[in-house]
Image (cartoon, rainbow, N blue to C red; front, top):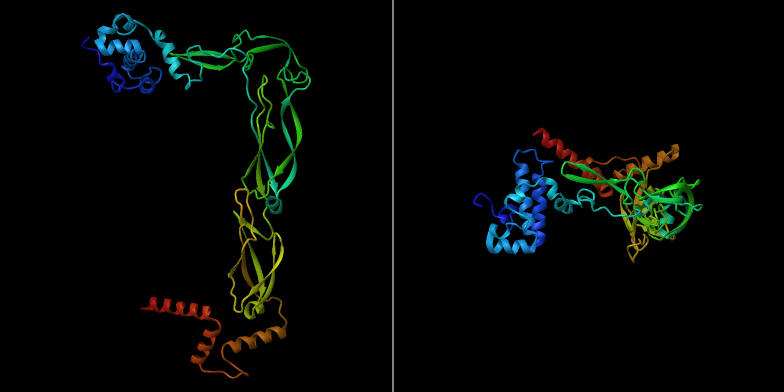
Length: 393
């Protein structure tokens, strides 16, 4: 026995390792060295060694004997010695199939479930487009869904004269041997039901389901937003062999609004004001989802100024409080001016420069006058001048 490695060493686990740890170690090493996937000439021998170690350490009685007496303690118990070394891989396949059933379809090793396969119906998804007002306030919508429903003519049975499928013998699965593995596949004759129908229903042609367009009412809760989903339980595709139907998921889309933009619980909009209102101040009426409100524009308000209206936003389905409405002031430049209006604006511009009654003033006084009326413009011009002065140095 001098040439045999310690079983704990083979699996790379400690001597006090529990059953789950030993099983995980075996699974990892068996995948690595299985000859179907590892073309190394020594892979087969390593796989035999790994399986031999697992057969002993996964069996409480064999493990106890091995821990007390070593290899001598397990001779004649189905592992080690000539009895194992002369075995082919089919002798250990059942053990291997049990470990890897969850990876290769759940039926390796011949443990396929017998009886008709009960298959729940598929879930369905549909997109529903709402207006902003509908999304915020909630609404009930009618939708048409094309899906597969239980056949009323045969009550979902598919027909009469059912008998056990001769191909899969009622399991709904067939097994294909690939090397040392047995992989389960859906039976091609009965399509996984485990039965065949001698007299198929003329309406559903033996499937137990028919396509139908049905109308549903969807209650949209107040405050939904783009991407929110409403689940309608059991309104998806019908199941097979008495299995429950799937669910229908209604995914919300919201149309762009011509005034408001939504960001979570907050709304925003642009509010155009006249040149004179921005300069002199005044009252401006703005819309909200609850009706019109009046805001006060301060004298000298600039384009881009944002005013917050607390509580005039949206209360989402995930919040108990309303957001805010943010109004961005846009100062509108007059267009289509008459000659008289243009003349007035020219005189107004001259007055900003400190000119009165057509009399010019010195440049220093003119700059001071402009700075007092248009500080941002003058500040920008000063920055531009400094920029070019720095380049010229």
